Length: 103
Image (cartoon, rainbow, N blue to C red; front, side):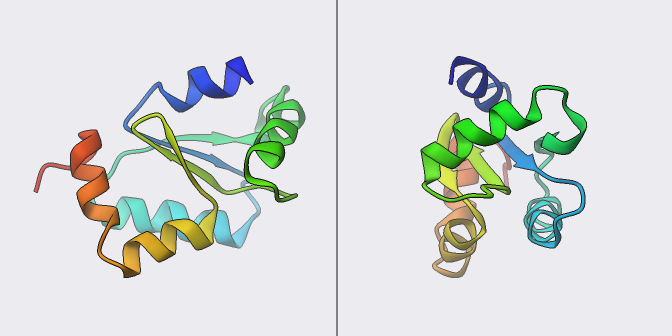
């Protein structure tokens, strides 16, 4: 849990991902299209990725958990939460507040 918390607060936007996951790709693409430069941790490339994945699964109550997004060090959640914020017009203000985008 401590490792996830530390990684999640390293940058304004942090995405825990799996490189072969299409939903992970969609979320990463969304943030890039919005002009965000997120920290991306590919769990399948990390030797401790399975441990991190278990912690994230407990945090969001879903397995497999990826993608999981943190903004400003706070858990936003998986794809459905991110897309809900985006479609509701709340994602960009959240990104501005966290200092991930300026415009």
